[in-house]
Amino acid sequence: MKTAFAISALAATAAAHATFQELWVAGADEESTCARLPANNNPVTSVSTNDIRCNAGSKAAASKCSVAAGDTVTVEMHQQPGDRDCSREALGGNHFGPVIVYLSKVDDAATADGSSSWFKIFELGYDSATKTWGNDLLNKNCGKQDVTIPSDIAPGDYLLRAETIALHTASQAGGAQFYMTCYQLTVTGGGSANPTGVKFPGAYSASDPGIKVDIWGNGFSEYTIPGPAVYSG
Image 1 (cartoon, one colour):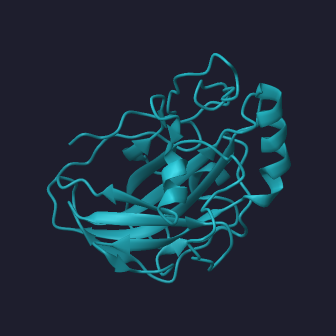
Image 2 (cartoon, rainbow, N blue to C red):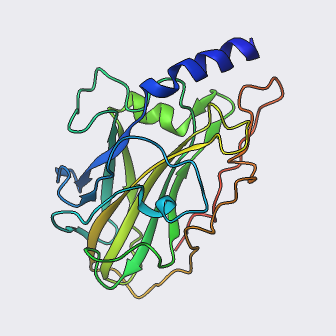
C-alpha cells in the first residue's frame, strides 16, 4: 500500500503545482492587487536560498492592501494563474502538507526584500483523527484559508507570507516542495506589539522533522509543523 501511494504521488507531481494568488480583506475580494506573484507555479525546493522568502522571480505588487488589526484576511491558492474555478483542486495530486502564514514588519511593503524577521500567525498541520492535512482544507474551500491579523500589532507596513509545503516526496532529502507568496499589507489600528521572529533562510532546516518526513510510512501518525510557535499576542 505504501509503495502504491508513493508511486501515485510521484506520477502526480508535475500536474499539480500551484500558487497563492489572491487576497480577501474582511470579506472583500482584492484579487491579486497586493500579491507578489512568482514567475511560475513551480515549488521552491531549497530552504537555504532567498527564494524561500517570497518565491522565485516574484516582483513588487501593483499596490498594498489595507487591513485593520484584528480583521480576517483570506489567502487564495489555485493551480494556474487567474484560474479561480472551484471545480478544480487548489493543490491536487496528493500534495499533502501544512498551511502556514507569517507576517514581517517592514518600512515599505512595496520595496521590502523579505530579509526582515518573520513571526508566525497561523498554522494548520495534520489531524490524525480525521487523517486531514491543512491543504486538504484548501482543496475543499476553493483554495481559501482565513487568517486573523493579530489585534495588538503596531500599525504600518507588513509582508504577509502564505505557504503550503507539499510532502508527497519528502522522505528523500530535498523532496519537500514549498509554495509561497508574499502579500503587501498596510495594517491600521492595532497596538504597539512588535513580535520577535525568524529569518528566511534560516527558519527551516532540510532535516527538520516536518520537512524531511515519510508521510506514506505505516508508522506515520503525527506531524511536526516547521518553524516557530504561532504568535499568541
